[in-house]
Image 1 (cartoon, rainbow, N blue to C red):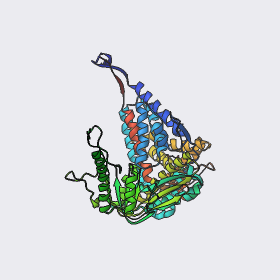
Image 2 (cartoon, rainbow, N blue to C red):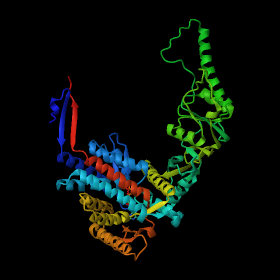
Image 3 (cartoon, rainbow, N blue to C red):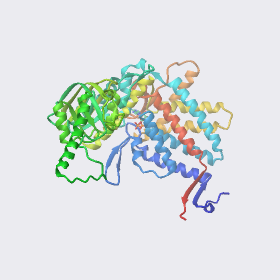
Image 4 (spheres, rainbow, N blue to C red):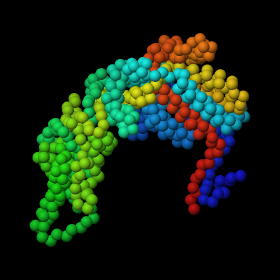
Length: 544
Ligand code: ADP
C-alpha cells in the first residue's frame, strides 16, 4: 500500500474508491446547479462581481463558469467542457454542463448499485455513438428545404434566452447577413464563414435598435492627428507592433560628451533615425500606418506631410485580424536582413479605402474592401457596459450557430425534442442488448431528459407532466414509424410560453445538428474522464 507520508520529500493526502467518485460527482453537480436556472428562453441571468468590483451580468454558461473561480479538480473538467463547447460550436454551453453532471449523477448511482465503472463507461460510449447516429440519420433536416428562414430561426433560438430576445427579428437578420457577407472559399474549395472576420464594436448611447452593420473592418480608434486626411483610397496598410517615437539609446549605454556642441549632434541624429524610418515606410508605399504602440508629435508631423493616416494604440488582436483580411504582415521592428533598417512593400496590407467615421461621440476607422478576405463589422448601441457586453456575447453565439448551419447545412428541432426522441430510442435500444452495458444505456437515456425537464422547470411548468407528454408523443411516432405507417420526423418539443407540446420545426425553434451531436459527445467524454478516476492524491512538497 502506498503511504504517502513516508515518500521521501512528499507529504500527501489520499482518497480512493467510491469516496473520491462521490466527491467528484458532488463537485460537478454543484457547478451544474449554478448554471441550471439560466437554461432556456425563460432562464434567468447571473450577476457576477469580482474582487475589484467589476460586474458581469450574463446568461451564457461558458462566461459564468469562466468567471467562477473553481478550485476542485473535477469541477475544472466541467469548466473546460463549457469552454470546449464554446470554442467548437459557440453555443449550447449551459446544456453541455447540465448533461455532463446528470450523466455523472446517474453513473454514481449505478456504481453504488455495484456496477463496475468500466461497464458504465462502455455503456455510455455505446449510447453516445448510437445517439449521434440517430440524430444525424433520423432527426436532422437539411436547411436547403427550409431556406433562409431556417437560418433566421436558428439565430433566434440561440438568442431566445439572451438579452437580444426582445429585438430578436432585428438581430437575427443582422447576424445572418453579417455571417453571409464574409463567405470565403479556401484553396481546397471548402466554403467557410469566418466569424472572426466580423468585428463587433460597442458604443454607449441610443437604443439597441440603432445598432448597425458597417461594410468593412471597423476599429474603435481615431486618426492620431486631425491634420491627417479622413479618407485614403487604394490603401496600403503598414501594421506595426513597435513605437514610432524619437529613437532613444538603450538603457545602460553611457556616453560621455565633453563638447556641448556634440550633444546637439546626438539629438539631431536621434531625430534623423526616426525620419529615416518614416521615409522607409512612405517609400514602400504605405499610406495608412497602424501601430499597437504610440506615435510621437515629430513622427505625426512627417506622416501628415506625407498625407498618410496614422492610428496608434490599435489592439493587438485587431492588428492580427487586419493582417489576415488585408493580406499584410505585422512587423515587430524595422531591422532588415543585413542589420540595416528596411521595409519590404510586400508586408503591406491592401484595401480599397480607409476612412474615419463619426458615430455619436466616438470616431471609428473603417477599412473597406480588404484584399485578402471579406470582412464586416457590427456597431452595437446600448445604454451601459453590462448590456453591451451581454449583447456582444449573445450576438457572437448567434453568429456561431448560423456559421455552423451554413457550413454543415443541417438543423434539428430544439425545445427538448431531440433529447426526448433519443431517450425513447436509447431505452428501446438498451432492451435489445443482453450485455452488461444495458443499465448504463438506459440511464444515459434518462439523463438526456434533464434538458427538457430543466427547460420546463425554468418556465414554471409542471416538468413531470410535460416531459411525460413529450415522451409519449415521441413514443407513438416512433411506434408508427416502425410499423411503416408514418414517414414524417417527429419534431415535438416544448412550448415554454403556453406549457404545451408543439412542432418545433414548424414553430421555428431550431438548433444546428452539430451543436447537439457535439454537446452529447463532449458531455459523455467529460463524464467518462471523471468516472475513470478512482484515486485522488494530493501531493504537498515538504520543506527540507
Ligand atoms: P445554451 O447555453 O445551452 O445554449 P440556452 O439558455 O441558450 O442554453 O438554452 C438552450 C435551450 O433552450 C435549447 O435546448 C433550446 O432548444 C431551448 N430553447 C430555445 N428557445 C426555445 C423556445 N422558443 N422554445 C423552447 N425551447 C427553446
